Image: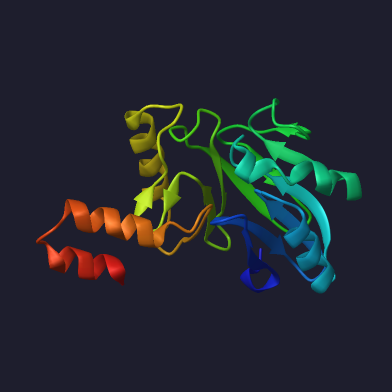
Length: 195
């Protein structure tokens, strides 16, 4: 795959969510749509046609827009959980999603939820981490265990250092405040984290 053939667009949603669109000149892959209006507006503005939806986990703030999108477009929905409304294709750790202009590797990352997966494209060094990894922190452990989250993060850390991570929320400021409360008196660490 030629890196120059795709673009990634961040779509702010709800209070602090991010959905993403991976696109070439005409087609779009939607990741974690929390709502549909901003997705519709963006694909119309860019004259794109959706060809698939990818879901990292079952929480509503990553899936609620799926039903509306499916009412307008008959496209496959990839997730690891058949209970997510609209899911047509179940994927698991090691699955490869072959789409018209990009192949996506599926990596299982339980911890935040038991069904959590992330999406990685090695050719373009891009990773969609959902609620597993954020800037300056990781996701809350709701269904899994701390050890599962640790193992999931190790999978991410084993990827190429040049991988660009697209996370599911904008938590940078709150994560920084948390780090500052933990590492109070270690200003050098905090200064490095802010970079």
